[in-house]
Amino acid sequence: MFDGRIATIVGSRDGPSYAVIAERGRVAHNHFPTGRQEGAEAEVISVDERAWEAFWRFVDDADVWRWRERYERPPRPLGQTSWSVELHRGDRTFFASGQNSYPSGWPAFCEAVKTLAGGRDFG
Image 1 (cartoon, one colour):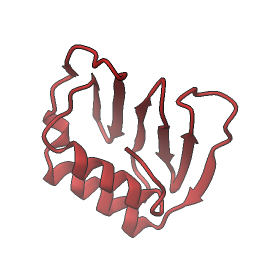
Image 2 (cartoon, rainbow, N blue to C red; image 1 turned 180 degrees about the vertical axis):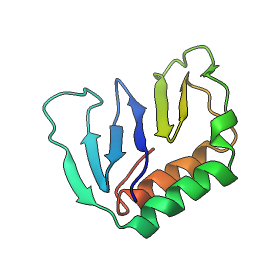
Image 3 (cartoon, rainbow, N blue to C red; image 1 turned 135 degrees about the vertical axis):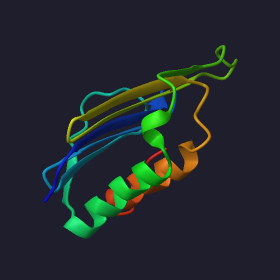
């Protein structure tokens, strides 16, 4: 059963951005080459239940549910990167976001999202 919902985005105003929204066995993947989140159509990918469960297993094993709500550092001279993660599964709801700062498991989380999106870029 495809229980849960994922909505996550990462990117910058001056560079590429990626958004992934997943629920009910479907993943909508957006890539915005210029960072502006307009005009791009989502590529919709069907995922099998095994991939869906593997993603949620990663979320549980990596303790993503315990990430702080906000991560932030001052802007860098060459721009800033923002991100957000929203997860819903069963009776659990989670939201975290950041700007120029990430939880320690961020690279692995991006890989898990990329895998769920069929290998499409994220992060």
